Image 1 (cartoon, helix red, strand yellow):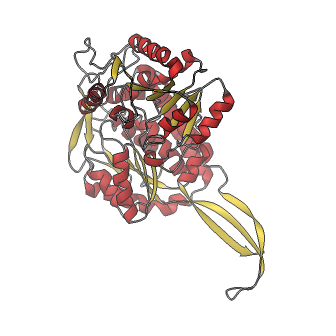
Image 2 (cartoon, rainbow, N blue to C red):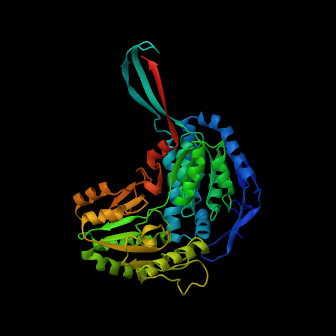
Image 3 (cartoon, one colour):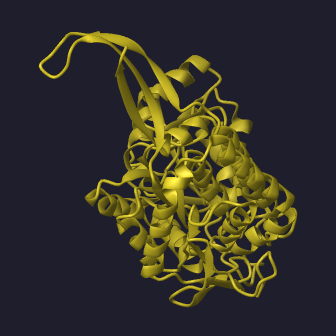
Length: 492
């Protein structure tokens, strides 16, 4: 088993500035590509989660009063330290997540460093919003006069940051950056499948000088420590990225004490392909479902909704692409499709493929485990055509290398199919008619829409509608998400 990046034998929890062993022992973190144990992660107890929240609450008053420049300097130090250690972090991320070398080198570790840097600058953004004075008449409460006012953004308090397994350090830094920049303290709770990189990120924050209690971490293979955090009276806000089912449970518990919530949940992205789309480009972008972390991404265009006149061309092009993508060892430079995160998850995805076949879909490509891989939780890039909107594979989030294709005849039908889902995170429109693409985008019930691209702009507000979540982060909107508005009024 590997040692920590600092050369220590065991990974530990950070609670109130002290690195401690898990109260419930430790559990193995398994490499999805080899099924070998990477290392053991600490299993935090519920009491340790509550202690971490209490430590964050104790640290909050002093940290919230620090000057923005001080918070900015620490976040920039974290960015610099992570950039210097990219070669150390990349192998660890590959081992515990199964991400390919390309994804780990370009999207996992460097993106996390960039996010620290973005919120180092964000800590210096203005928090005061001047408002025009208002002339008010005398009332029974107070004399009249010209009333000055301002609104200002204040930190929320203690934030429980709970993330998913697909992009563990990127997702976590996307929470830590704006939360710390705004003056909040945090308790980090990464996904149980791959917490090691996140522990290393917290160690890095500790090393660059974040005060004791400002950043804490608890980990575990069961919901115990996460549930204790959500229930803790010391936690003021829960920021969660993960499945809709777990998000609903968090919402129910957090709602009992009216905790602030930011929930980024599941997706079932619609890719509406009109007859005039650039098909070569469109096929490549939809095929990114397979090429980008084996489809384990909530923003993926997993539902291809294709005009009937180009339906066969798109299905044929996707089938050809699926056959060209190398499935294999993430450490090999030409591997495009790596493993799924766990054996249980692969079984779940395979169940969806079987369901699609049983309900009348045609497995045009993939649908099986690659025969050349003796170990690891691999599944071939899978394309299911001739789908209907009532099929499970069309309605439910699969979170794997599976694309379903549904035909349409006109614009109204395309919009209806795209919106016929409980999700609303990220949809796409492909058409050379920019006016039509923009018109259709306005009618899609999704928090984000890409027009002729699956690329992101990280300054946009990111989040979903319906069962895809509550709230928005990203860019300056991330700072807003981790702050409360306070109004101040005075006589002019």
